[in-house]
Image (cartoon, one colour):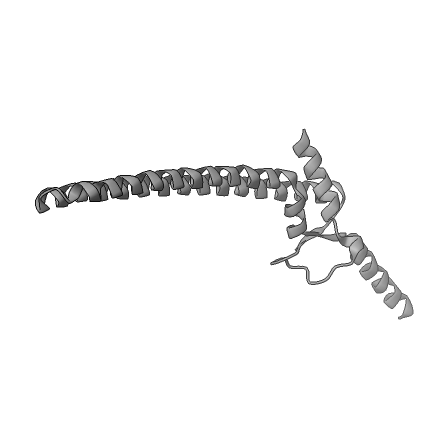
Amino acid sequence: MKKLVLVIFLIIATACEQNKIGFVDNVKLMEGYQEKVDIEAKYKIKADALGKKRDSISQAFQIEAQAFQTKAQGMSDTKAQEEYGILQQKGQFIGQQLQQEEQQIQMQGQAEMDSLISKVKKEINAFGKSNGYTYILSGGDGGSVLYGTETKDLTEEVLKILNEKYKK
């Protein structure tokens, strides 16, 4: 009986040792990943440029609207309403154009971030396979690891690999 218990214990101990488990803190990983930082910076520049363009166009439109108000005082009501309608349509068209540009920038940024996340997941999979991990869990905000010892935290190792590959 003692031998049977010992054999079962050894089988369980061996099975437990075969499962190499680690975790990656997604928040730290993404904050430290240079490619993500560069993508965010690129889209911040695009958003700032669009904001300046919007301000410039809005300012020019306001000047045009003020000029119309002055001009409208000397017009008949019918003519003033007609030109006001044209001015209003122009304003709506400009607003729609700017909104489309903003949406396009957001969609491009989201597509790049989705691609980046896919790349990170593939790299974590490759890291896990090449280093003999059975499981690599997700940590950080929204992750599935509520606690993990520092020795099981693979974040820095994976981050180093990602940043080295990005530099190339």
